[in-house]
Image (tube, rainbow, N blue to C red; front, side):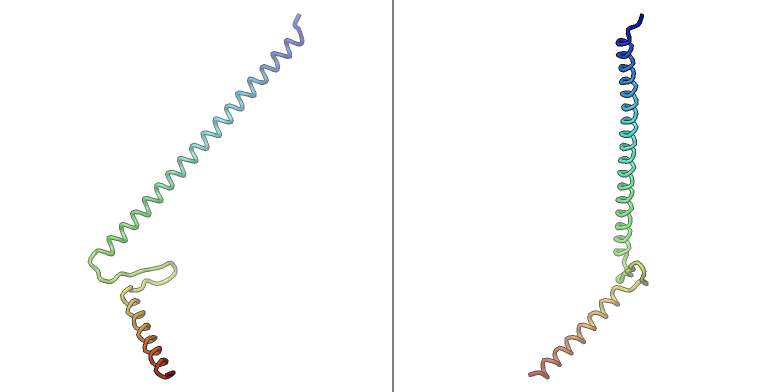
Length: 108
C-alpha cells in the first residue's frame, strides 16, 4: 500500500543525499590536494631561498677570505682573474685616449 508519490519523494531524497556526499568527498579531496600542492610549493620556495642565501654567504666569505683577486666564472666560460680584466680594460682605455688625442691634434 505504498503511494508511488511518496516512494518517488524518498528516491529523490536518497539521490540528493548520495549526490551531496559524493560532491562533498570530491570537494574535500580537491581542497586537500590544493593544500598539499601549496605546502609543497612553499617548501620548494623555502629551500630555494635557503640555497640562494647559503651560496651568497659562501661567495661573500670567499671574497673576504684575504685574497686580493677573485676569480669570476660565468656559465660556459673559463674562470678569469678580475684584477687582470680590470688592468686590460684600463690599458684599452689608455690606448683609446691616446688615439683620440692624436686624432684631435691632427684635425686642428
